[in-house]
Image 1 (cartoon, rainbow, N blue to C red):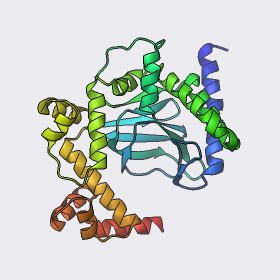
Image 2 (cartoon, helix red, strand yellow; image 1 turned 90 degrees about the horizontal axis):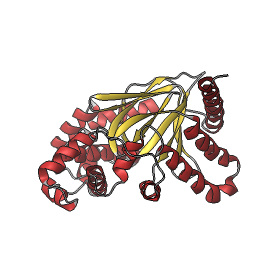
Image 3 (cartoon, rainbow, N blue to C red; image 1 turned 30 degrees about the horizontal axis):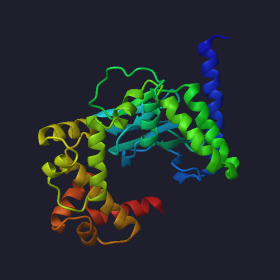
Image 4 (cartoon, helix red, strand yellow; image 1 turned 135 degrees about the vertical axis):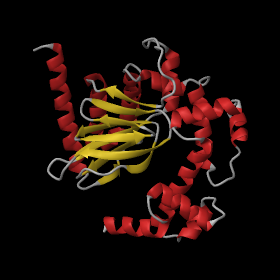
Length: 306
């Protein structure tokens, strides 16, 4: 057996076992927060249209089926041969491409620990960084047994819950180390380096997520992360495919959507809660993002869920 066919056989075996683990625990279309910190499972029983989402700094992989992430004008298809790496909190659209009730699309999300990445980089012993396009914060990595094996061992801890507090942090550290040896290591180095533009944009995004309801002066936020206004604006748009004001608007509208859907606020109350002073402006911008006015959109979402 050649090395390539052996690697492929190992990947198939790992992915099949992981798919079984997820299907055993997730019995219908949903996202499931596991008892292991920063590990989430997902299952989709049919293909879907693109749906707005916020992608955390994370890796996302499917072990059965395929999905697509749409960011700006770019789309990233990931399946059994590759995984998605995202280094910023990124507004995007997620689409399930290959799934049905007999063979659902299943996979997992592992949130990245940027502090752990920085520690591993500082210790050295990693392959040298290569010159890359620094205008992207998302990419597709090649699936390998070296990456998948520790993830499989992390999933195995679900059968040994008492060991999770002790062993999960060790395995998660190994996963981060393997990612820093992957073909997407440059994205992770970029966001973990405190003197990089990506790191500063990430800090600005943290502020926006915590303060999206407040008035935004872009020049103040640029100064806060020690960047000139033109440089800040340029790199923010490069990395997120949005301007800072568009990013803030996306956060506001999605939080308003959550408040109406889960907290049962009416449209005007939700708009006011997230920082809008004009109900008509809120309704207009909500319709532009979600395709229909707030009340009708929420009613449709509830019908689909029933």
